Image 1 (cartoon, rainbow, N blue to C red):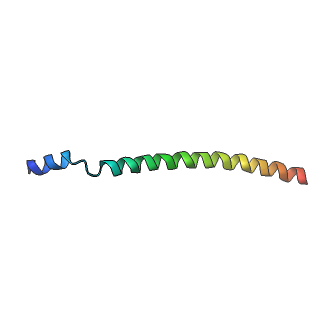
Image 2: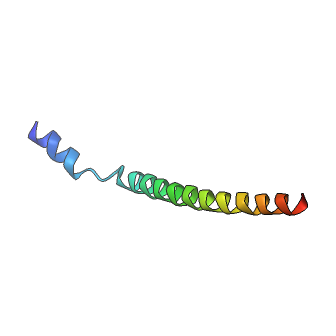
Image 3: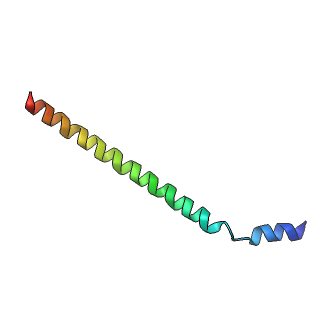
Length: 54
């Protein structure tokens, strides 16, 4: 049992994929925040153009 636990603790096989998944998650959060900010700015620009055309 001790040998199995020690083997599990020392196993580094999935560490890289987990790190890549964490990085991808962080990037998606940053992209969503940027798109949200651009979306509200773009919405106000369209509202301004719409009111100018009336």
